[in-house]
Length: 140
Image (cartoon, rainbow, N blue to C red):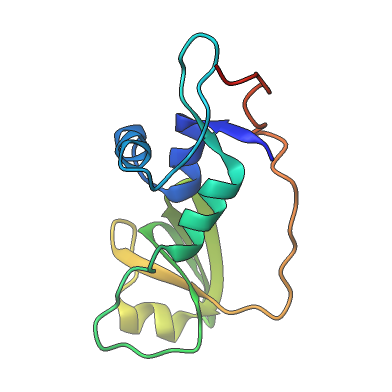
């Protein structure tokens, strides 16, 4: 199983490096230390913790969609009938095509906080080649 640096684990969980350090100190995340005593996070331990995290609560709203990304509207392009709304949700750029009527009714303009709610019948999974596991080093 691969090991990850604290910053990589923080990115996966959407938290700070300090939070990952506290999770490791409390035993919720396991992992070896390098010869230089740098802490690594075990990939299996990270996956188990990520699977147990509760999604953000959204009040009384009920929906069958399970993928909700909180973000800020960064761009809105409208024509007579349709509109394109761009949100920045953490490191993700989400673009939605919807009716101009909906955009106007919701008051979507740059600077408005919103949720991108995604329900898809097809999800592609790719390996994260830009975030390689930490070098495989023998724990001390």
